[in-house]
Amino acid sequence: MRYGLKERLLGALVLIALAVIFVPFLLEEKRPDISISDKIITPKPPEPIKSIVEVPVPPTLPASLNDEQKQQAIASNKKSADSRLVLNPEGGVDAWTIQVATFGDASNAKRLVAELEKNQYSAYWRKINALTVVFVGPYLDPQQGREDQDKLLQLQGFKTLLTRYVSEHEARVQGSLSGSNN
Image (cartoon, rainbow, N blue to C red; front, side, top):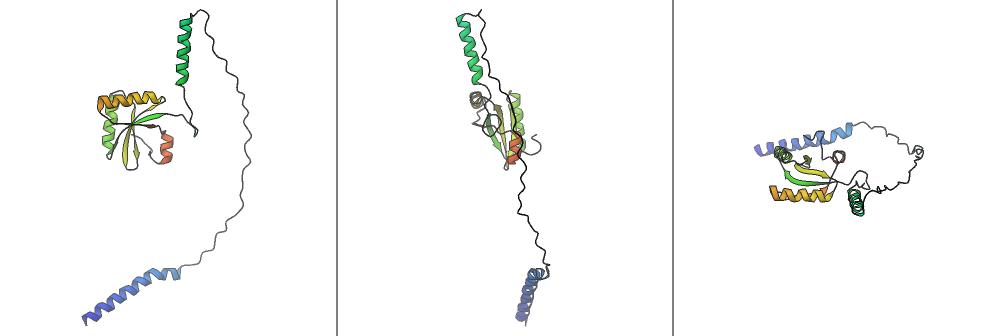
């Protein structure tokens, strides 16, 4: 008799489970379909912006300079022209940053940032996925980034990675920067 009681209880449980699953489908009301407009409304394009660009006039060197001084001035002018800002195609400025270390615990990253700032480095950290990554930079000149990368390796033993700098705005859009970075 016990065996028959177990089978009946098991059968009753199965029937109750099926009722819990399928009765809401039977009692659900039919909702009216929402009509979707297939009309596409496009705004008028904005008026074109008119701008006037003047032709730049190259600077002239004073006549009082001798040939050697003129050559030095021309060389320094070329050097400063080479270090000017470069705009990337997506907008913004091409910049570089050094990825120093990655931690699972944000407190370790904060300690490293404080240590790097004591050594006169511009350091910051960002949360990327579940990890906290410490960076130094940004640098407009990749050569300056490489020099600091070498210093970090020689002085502190960090094996680092020179990467493109991602601005705070881009990092927020990508989801790798929360509301506060500290």
